[in-house]
Image 1: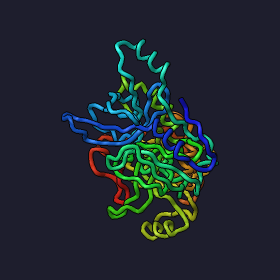
Image 2 (image 1 turned 90 degrees about the vertical axis):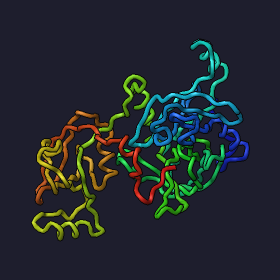
Image 3 (image 1 turned 30 degrees about the horizontal axis):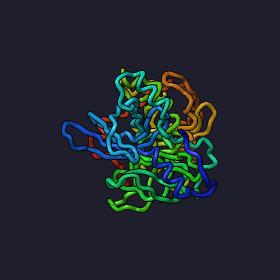
Amino acid sequence: MCMVWSSAYAMTPADISEVKESIVFIGVYADKDIPKQLGSGFFISPSGMIMTNYHVIHRGKSIRVWKYGEFTYYEAIVVGIDPLADLALLQIARPANTSDESFELVKNNPFPFLRFQTDPEKIVTGVDVWAFGNPMSNRFVTTKGIITTDALPGFLSPFVRQIVHDAVLNSGSSGGPLLTSDGKVVGVNTYIMSPNGEYSGLGSAIRADTVMRSVNNMLNSDYLNQEKPIPYPALDIMFVELDDMGTNDALQKAFPIQKIPNTFGIMIRGIEVDDYSYIQGLRNYDTIVAVNGLPTNDRLQLADALLGNEIDESVILLVIRRGVFINVKFVLTFSKFDYNKYYDKDNTPQQLVPR
């Protein structure tokens, strides 16, 4: 069943108690009967589909899920992964002797689940939010805060959107939902901001629009047979964002023979002759200012301009090359992000701690 709320302005204790019916505690196991990772998640369908973070289930051989108010666990399987957004889909089922019996159990007693917020006007700075999860092995905890930043690019991909909030998160909060007062999920809690290893009071959640797009792609990925993450289109470039904070002047001084444009945009760096992007027609110090006519002043606009385009599709890049505007026809490739290497090691930026 989907949740119904008694208040339009704040969650009541009754609302919070009802939300907890949709929250799960996740234990991830390798070879031993001791969990290697603990985390949080929440139901997104009456059939028992669960959203969580990818880093919670990375390299797990078995997954156990505990529901609120129940002592025994359910076994879960992975049905989709999106490491670039740090998201994963799990599926659990009530123990049954046959698939027909399992279907009847779900039909007669569906899992309570949460819905995502689809109205972007309700995912804005200053809105009250509630974080649910299992921090530091304390199960089914709720904290409250506000959205402090409503649109930041993801740490691993500009296609990912995150929001920053000050509801308290700790280790074990990963994968839990961030809700507004109407009971809609606005994000999936993923990181705390931790400069120098100290908690800053701010946390990060993958924004609902990114999560919904990821869910659709994961459901269509045939992960059970392919065991591959969902693909992302890419230009396969390294770049610097030009801005009005001195970046352009600093680059001009560092590379005096180049003509660094006095504009915003995406300036390409590090292209080698045999690289895919070189073969497609891009060159070092090219500055992308539009994709298919859409401005690309920064990486968020670059990602927005590329969203909706598929791998192997052509786009027209408007670039500035030594002061001249030219069009480059570019066939999108796929992201080559090595997620196993990234999640196997502690490659997280210093100010970010996965939770």
